[in-house]
Length: 189
Length: 136
Image (cartoon, rainbow over all chains, first blue to last red; front, side, top):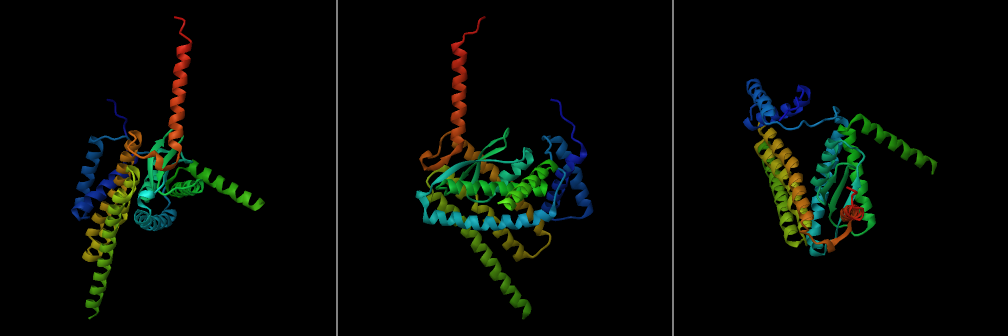
């Protein structure tokens, strides 16, 4: 098997993450321990080879903080909602499989969006069409097309947040153009 | 006196966090019993735990108040954030493909439309090939 050499800079986020896990597990962040962890992390990353994750090279903290707050808020409300659905509707629950096409074609961003959606109760990624970056979501309590539209809007909003935080420059440009277009249309009407 | 007071306030906070976390487990149990098919049960079984575990870890952090513990708790939650959607997706996907679900409970199924279309396309292609026997 021919291995593709991974440059150190692409490997760096993984190694840093492994060092943090190492330090956390030992509950010891002293330099000696971290150095030893770094050596182990480097060896592990090279011996147990995985295809590199292609990051976009961007991370916007200013958007990440409100996104985290929004995520936690939705987590709490949606968990309570699923609990309530279980109690009130139970067996009479009606669901739907909704297709949502995302803007980005980056694997990383599609995965991140799918994860964020799956973590919030009420939606579950059933299938991913990688060629068109379409997510097929199973959603609880969908009774009409309007409900499905709400889900679609919500998914695209989540994706927009993630693009702003860690999307590629091209996706960001696309998003900005879309925003401008929407604003212009609003101004005209 | 102040120390004692703040201690009891913290104890109340810990108790509330633990009980709310346990409530999320109850939510999962209620969902498992009450929801009608595999896919809707998946929602109840995997999702409220994300919040439930967060509340438990917060309770631990408040109770022990040690800086060394916080990274472990954080790593613990992050690993759950990373793994629980994957397992939910794999079970959901397998359930959909092997038809371990009740289609009559779906109001919309846009994946089925796509699958049908692809199946029809393949049948048409095969028929075309059959109609024109290759000259060789």
